[in-house]
Image (cartoon, rainbow, N blue to C red):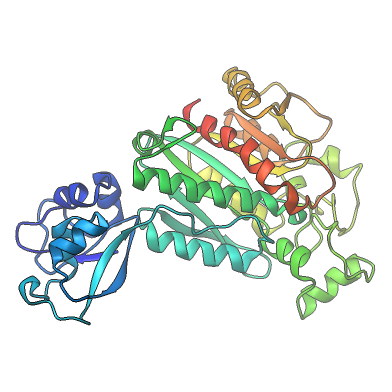
Length: 395
């Protein structure tokens, strides 16, 4: 919601007027100098939107404010050209609406277009989100990272490394919406105060690592050479539900130089719906971009969300730091998922992250069954995962 600065207004005043954290307002307006607002300057108020109201006979600003539990001055601020003493029946005014409901519904097939639409909705409502394109997929779809918060501890989440595991993006986006609601409404999630995390943690989120693959699984092969090649790799089968790879048939989570040659020796040697690690490490634009993102940040911990198995892989070659055990034990407590330290599988993003940075890295396998997991499991998976999302912030 946009407001125009009046004489004597301040961001601190807006914070109190709309009951929104001052830091959230400051970060929603990076171009504004909090110490010297300019009259007429546009200021964005996060967590709000406006609605039109048609004046009824007998209405006054005070009556409308009282009935709708809105601050009288909030109405005046949104209607600077309206004389409150001479309201006309049928006249249209603007009223502030505090958003207390989700705009993201993760419980549906979650492709790249839906992700983009939901990201645009969230950014419009919560402009303190920092959004950047840090790379592009094979088919030039934007790889987007979101950052929320100002803390020195940077926690990273990512989803949909594998195409038919797109439900991880849906779960992550729904929790992101709940997190933003808790921040702007000063609410708790599972009894945990959320607003303090804004100054303690910087949350880095890549919701969809493999947008081309996700769209292939959900929408079928695209027109043109990439679609034709995917059909050839899939032996002419138009059902791509088993497809894990990117559009070129490279498994993005087998692309990292962490004993890559061990996996390469025992996996497919040419493009395939799953498990082909590429002809060498880091050949795909998606994996290169994710490596460069980690190298440009200082992630305090990293969580890669996959499906399925209700397990959490947390070790790599003894290089994981000691505190990883305490963290994964807390993940187990809040989710019921089983921690597994070592597994005979290499070259994943988690493996490479631990190897390169010696920081806690986790592969979290959501749900049970055969990928792609059915949406009938969504609500159960979401409830199990909430605790992991939260624990990654406080551990």
